[in-house]
Length: 399
Image (cartoon, rainbow, N blue to C red; front, top):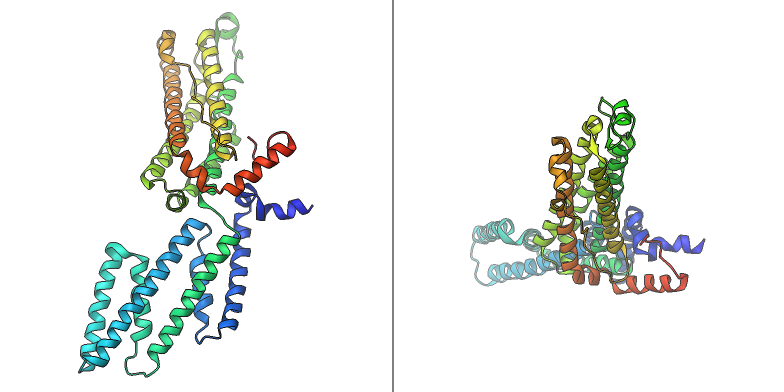
């Protein structure tokens, strides 16, 4: 019972399953800590501490994205302070007319806005906001002091947000691994389902009975099970869910974003190929295939299914496993495939394409593994390895 309660806070894969709930808990705890920080410091404008926590954590769940946001907020705040102090120095020592001061602030705002669009992004936006918080009312005697207090509260809020993410981390790298693993596992099941759909109609026609060397299918197309279509929809949802993790995973792991984009594109291509195979399956219901090529197809499909399951297992594994070759079957070594009906040749061609895509993904994952494996957290890996040793078998990660 205690283990079930603590698992979402300790085990990364369980955290992946309950990520939304944990995000809500973490945000609530961070807001409470921000209130306590306000009580301890007793600085004016303490509301900016809680506002900052909500801005940083509200829509961001994972460490890489949160650290990036926090870094941009701190840099923007510091740049804004320096810029504002420069304006105040000019106002008190050089400025003769108020309109000159306003013109200077307008000029600086324009420059900051230009840089925000071109290079600085959120950092530039915060630079301008912080500057205006301090110099917005040059005629007010305490405006600079109030602005400084707000800036200090922003820095405190940023520190609270980062501290909470360290206590209960949600790493984008782990989420990226688990989402990709879940999709590969689901793709393997879906691909096996396509093969089972074709085999389920074997020998159901009179023609098949007359020709023992062939496997025939009903004259009409056989619609695929709706469960397979639903599974494909879930796979596509997870594919979209991977996208927000790419930038944060690049930040956490040090993998080039372009490489992660290539992995994502290959991931998408695999799903697209399986979708085409799923669409082709009903049309093959009334097309004959000889026993030799049918046996080849069964072995081919089995090896590719096993390959997807293996890749998913390695992605989930806390151990430093290797990605093995996808399959040693080469369609070009079976010239009889080229004498099949056009529809079956197309099906074999799609299967060969799927093999190449899986091999490309496997190679990319193996090349980048030192980075994403290390970024997943050594504590997580060691804990899971101890569990394997204690239980004498596999962990709950379904290796």
